[in-house]
Image (cartoon, rainbow, N blue to C red; front, side, top):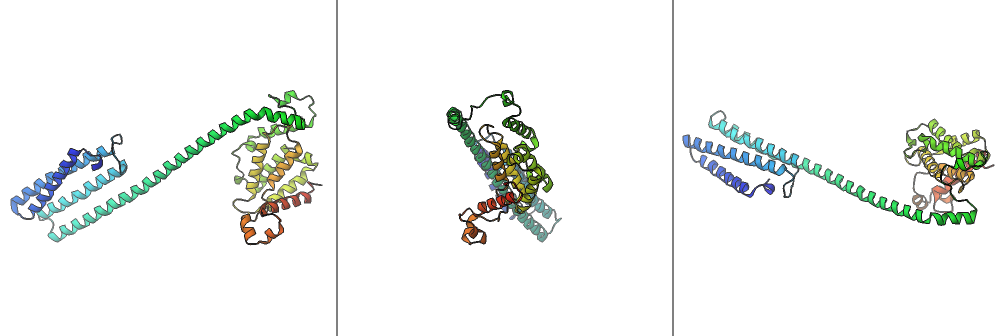
Length: 359
């Protein structure tokens, strides 16, 4: 309270405290009416102390004033009430003793209990407030970190967008000269198609249907809330929208059987599980529809989606480093140190051959 108090009020409070101690000492040396007079004068000093503390408390709570605030407003209020309550018990006990309503031993025991209770209460308040301040400090620092990261990401996005805008013409010229890919036509590609039976046009229509399916094409898609049957339906919807069956010349029944076995082959680990496989497949599909139809073929889309779907099938659940270091049997079967990735690719290709996707 002193750190935010008026210097004159602080000195006045110190003087009253000293007077209160002096009156208490003199009261032990006197008896009768003089003792009562000293007690009454000490009570006035105590009430003056109450008033000063109350004024200083409200002054300290006002955050618009200058000075360091060691405690927040809630803590200052709790300390104030705790001090006023505990200090009221001492003169109450003394008054009851002077009026012969309490004997000496009982009043002294009462004072000791009140003294210890006030100290424990003050300690509990300080500990509680310290924890609260630490939590608020962590939240403040976390918010500052997030704001800083958001600023950096936004700057990077602007930089990459500017770089993309400046290089888009050169990239398009390179694609046209090297691969014969025509420049991107702005507007609706459906209006620029000359033949509605053209496979590229039909594939574009199919992708438009996928994009229109907001449940599958949204970035907040969450496969972790889906059952096994719902995951199979979502996977088939994505593969069908990208014409994977037609690209591989495979019946949908074979693809359905392949999807079902792949999902079953995924482990029940919290991370490398079937739900994650569907999530990765859906995210890859959302990225794939951003590609220009003339830049990738339907077979490219099929390979991309199937690779995303089987990317972690039958994952061991431990890192490549641990597998290699411990010379696990799985690590001895693969040539490179990317043990899990090679194993998943091997299992995925095996299942594709088994279900006739690569005949």
